[in-house]
Every structure is written in structure tokens, then in C-alpha cells.
Length: 93
Image: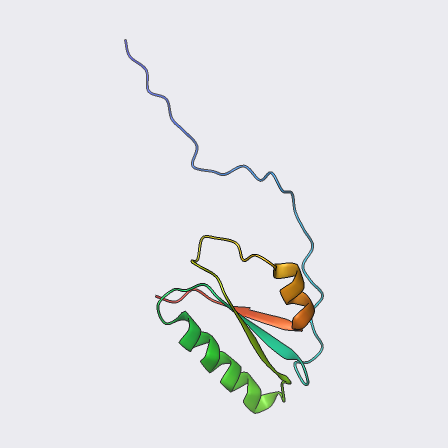
């Protein structure tokens, strides 16, 4: 009699949990980061979000960082985090 091996689709969390970053009290005067993942229309979506946020919060400006694709982590995120106060990222197809 033959047998069937059933594999679990659940991943293994090797990194453990990490606490969330503290929430900003306001976006007023904050430099916003746009972390673009190179998906179609994602930059346009993010720029529109920044535009809408700017109507209610006087942000200091924006700094855009381009990732080569959605799956690859962005190099230099630590340095990028020091340049901006908040980051907007999105996947948009």
C-alpha cells in the first residue's frame, strides 16, 4: 500500500516577534518616506496618499526610495529611517 505525505503550508517564524514602532502624535512637520516596490501604479497611489495627507497635515517633504521589486527587501532601510519620520508603502496592481 502506498502512502501520501501531506506538507504543511505554514511557514516557520525564525525571526521571532518584534514590537511595533511607536505611533507618531501627528504628521505635522514630518518628512514622509515613500518606499516604492516597483509594482504597477504603486508610486502613483503613494503620491496621491501623500497629497491627501498634505491637505490636513503640513508635512516637511517627502523622500522616495525605490526597491527593485516587491519581494526583495530594501537595502539601507536603517539609513532611510533616519531621513524620514514616517513611511508609506503599498502594493498596487
